[in-house]
Image 1 (cartoon, rainbow, N blue to C red):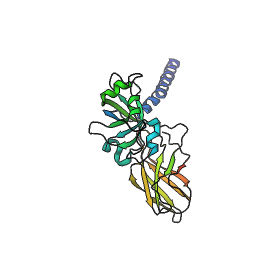
Image 2: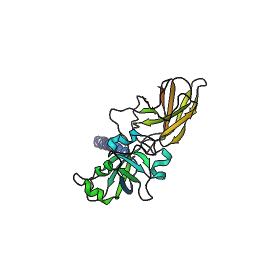
Image 3: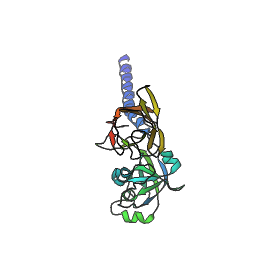
Image 4: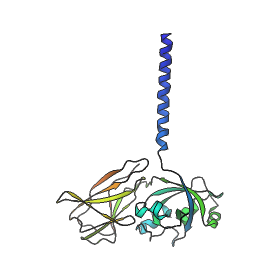
Length: 261
């Protein structure tokens, strides 16, 4: 009898361990961004991609990033005073002409109405359609959608820190991050003052652009704060000596970082 009880106990323990191993990935998978519901319209920009004049301040990068599949988003809900710039969303429309996959878009601008969270570039809007149904979908003008924030992915790219064209060496420094992967917002940027070993905070000028008057001299070390998400803990990320002593407006410097969720 004791042998049977031992075998039964071992069997139950094995089953419990198996279930734990199986259910752990499922529970982890559940920690993801929520699905939201709204409407999406579209705009047509010269050249057929996105606009270089978006509120995020990306310029030509904002026109061509993600093959021009970019989005204007609602100001308070998704743009969030620029914190939402560079975020990626999976957007699926609900009409009969729509595909199940939808489209992944990058936020580059703000706008829209109270019931329209997205105004998509024409390439993004048509990519929501089933093959051959692109023109029919555009006839609607505005469609019901569901959307969810997803990790941005830029294969072969690392995070770049651009000194924007607004900068003036060496008394005014304006910065923006490009190819920001993952799902976390950058909510603070600081530059190390080597002489005092203190961090000087940059201000969010507008959109994705951060600036600092009278920046430190010499090679610059930068750190930025990732606010975290449903799947990622908030944290500071250090980028040592990323900007050279004689920096140039319009040049993007490689951080060698991939923000992987």
